[in-house]
Length: 206
Image (cartoon, rainbow, N blue to C red; front, side):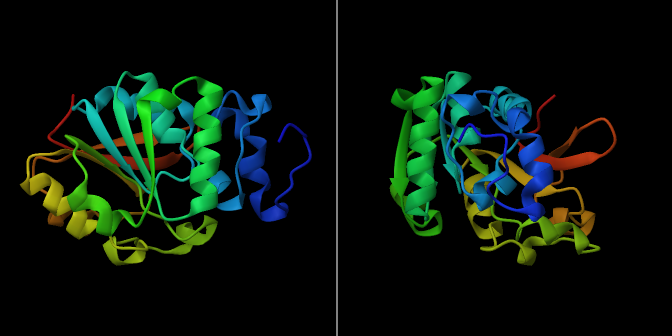
């Protein structure tokens, strides 16, 4: 998609307008659908998460169109990218080719909640669906507002000694963070005017 015309309609316009922040090589053939456009992390923040997340083999749960998996591979990690949507996973493969990192990423079409026990990794990046652009109308966003609820998977990973980075919306309830170890570190990712999202890290990062 190289056209300046937004193919996804008015609801997606603000995301389309910042598409080069999401993936800087957009005009080289980046593929997305509307959900991918909403959900992909801005490139600079994905690279930051990749640099902070310890571990050499990262499971990128709910990989979507591959923005985070690509960033982690660019940080030198081996990535297992899982998504239940076959079309979106195909887009992720194409986008990884554009960035020249496809050889570092294993793409798996599966439900990550079921595939988890069969996979070998030492770090987990999990950023489950927030429910589309309307997520922000919730006064307080909690674990049950994700679909699916990622908390059981996060707790399993922490218990087994896997490093974890969890993507959380800016309106995520602080009370809900009590479900994570008390030394979990929360970092904010901001643009010029507001918090875009938060990332919870365990073990703690500087």
